[in-house]
Amino acid sequence: MSKIFELFGFRLDRWNEEAACNRAKAWCPFMDRICDGGGNRYLSALDIKKNPSLASYFPGLDVVQSGVCSLRLRETEQPWIVCPRRLLSLKGESPSSLQKHARQQVVRRASLRSGKVYRIWSEVKIKIDTSNVDDEMKSFDYTFDYVIAGVERRRLSEVASLLGLTEKKVREVAKNSGYTFAQRDGETWIDDFPADPVTIIEIMTSSTSGGDKNKRTQIAMACEDAVKDPSNHTGPGINYRQVWARMVSQLIVKSEVGIAWGGRTIWLIQDVLADYISKTTALDLNKYISEDPDEVNILAFGYGDLDDADSPPICPLSESTFYSGPISEGTTKGFVEIVKMGAAPDKSHVWRSLFSKAPCGSFVP
Image (cartoon, rainbow, N blue to C red; front, side, top):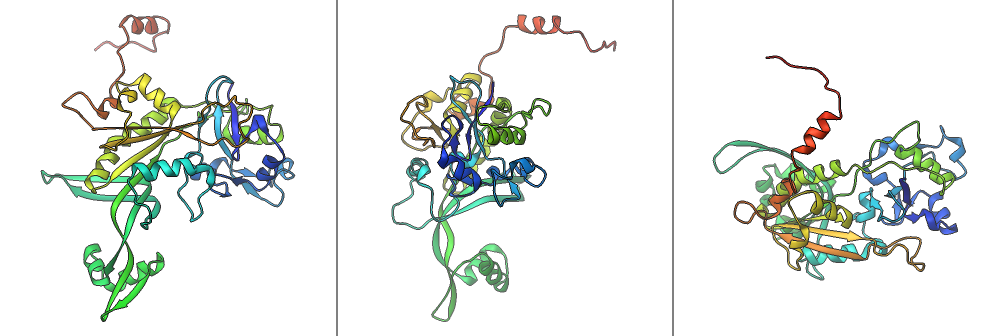
């Protein structure tokens, strides 16, 4: 039976006074700010005015995002992280110490230099029509979780030419976006314009199944019940296929984009998802464990031993494995294997499935 494993960052099976105080503020300890539901769970927010029984748990708050970080499907299994903030948040100037290991791994795999200034942008959307080497028009419509880039000084006139904008418009955009102007030798410069290297960071956590309203397994209902009684609630399931499909539909494209921009793309996932990919596709990630980045790069994080009696109420993700390799090796190998099936089932299985189910109709051409 699925249970919420972590609520507002704290393990439910080790709930304590600190956890209760944190929950009262609806605080995310991984972002070190109020929980935003992972940025994509607004329809599951708890309306305290419509649920007055929750008011004592969230004093002074009117709306609270469902602070479900992870789900544990069975007591003996590793939890599945369902909130991207739990894996890594790159927002803000003061990162949480709870994600120190993840940040260090990103810095290492992105080859970011100590002491050099880098800036981070979140939810970067690029939607354009462009052409390929054969002059065929193609559409590009993707949003990147994070883009990390360097900083360099550029003349205002040069930036206007690069972006195809007037200098007046560049000034306006730069001012609204918080860039720094400087005057040198009678020219205006932007001192902190984005520059190489470019690193794309994609965070892929698990999707939940829709849940059952009557059984109170929808994410908001499960959150409400867990708040009131941590030991007595039922959580939604995990939609394995959906999370894999979301990742595989973007993995190659976004990796190619990073290469085309002279940088790289790094995917952050959980170790249980890495295991699922290896078991269900032709791609065995264990063959691509590496120290050095390549065309496709995946960082997988894990909880480690959750049954350790000394483990804290907030579990650090202190274990990680780095996988990297080419998109393709020849015609059949490489990360392109992720789109291929692991092994075809024997044809007898289709006869068994068809025979055990009544036909929905017949067809006579």
